[in-house]
Length: 75
Image (cartoon, rainbow, N blue to C red; front, side, top):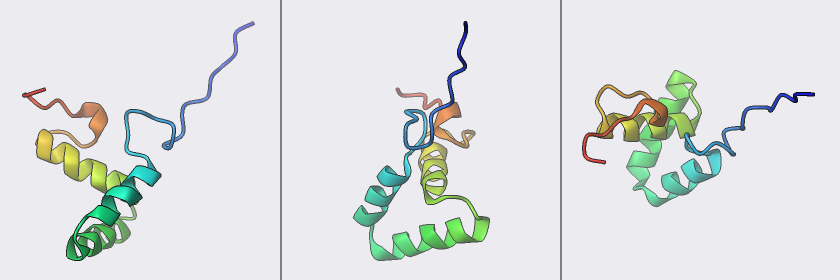
């Protein structure tokens, strides 16, 4: 009998930033950057971890939207 596995939650995935990691990163940033990221998350209605992931992935690979499709040339 074959059992179906459930996909990992964002907290369990190693391909995406977890909500806990996002909060830790946010806490380490200057306050004005925190406000801007939170405002963008609220404006777009994306979770904070997705906003941070998109920002980092976009920095590393201008064509990437998330870590999954991020292919930085210098890795």
